[in-house]
Every structure is written in structure tokens, then in C-alpha cells.
Image (cartoon, rainbow, N blue to C red; front, side, top):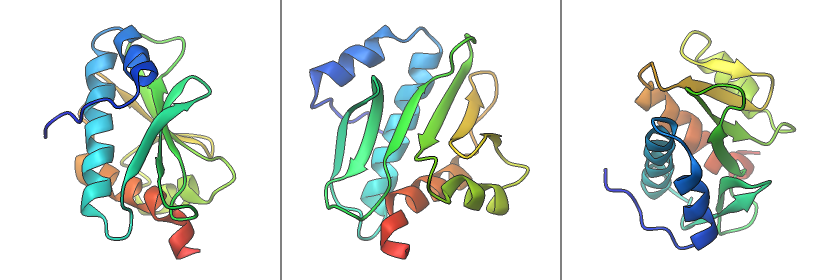
Length: 137
């Protein structure tokens, strides 16, 4: 997959500030989010911005999907995460669908390590569920 160009210099600067190998993994996750959005019916254009200083991805059309954020996990050199809004049922759905596939952080995140492969197909499904969350409700 080709890395999408940054349209926001502030977002690009946040990525530039990550240490390797977390930066590479977060860039891969960013690419997967854009690719999944492009392949998922009804999602449309994604807006890339910063929320709480973290790269965030939201559907341009209101009330289509829930915002996805990605960031390094504080206190570790190898951890990174995909965050969703904690007041959605998304993480509960992810737990139900993939109980042994992901490491979860409460009702807000999927946790990853640079030292382990990412389960790409289940992750694509989780991303698609987030980007279409409000359409299904």
C-alpha cells in the first residue's frame, strides 16, 4: 500500500516526532485506515486532523462513522494503539468478534506492539466498523 500524502503539516509533524520503529508502524496503520475507508461502501472522504494532539481520522460526512485516533502508548518503546470513542460499543463489538486476536485497553483501544505482527484482516474489519458506526445505529 502506498502511504497517502499528508494534507495537514501539524499531523505530519506529529508523525515525524515518533521514534522508530513505532513511527513506521503508525504510518502503516494510517495507510490501512485510508485504504479501508476507500474500500468500505458509504465511508467517503476521510478528514485527517489532530485531536488531543493525536492523529485522528473521521468521516467527512457527518454521522457516518466514529473518530479513530492512533498514537504511541506512553511508557513503552514498542507499544502503539488504535483508539475509538469510549462511549461507543465498538470495543465491546471487537471483543465479541475477536476475543483472542487483539489486546484491548478498556472500552477505548486496541493495543499493538512493534514486536508482533498486526492481524490485518481483522483490523481492517474493526476499522470499517468504526468508520460506519453511526450508519448502523
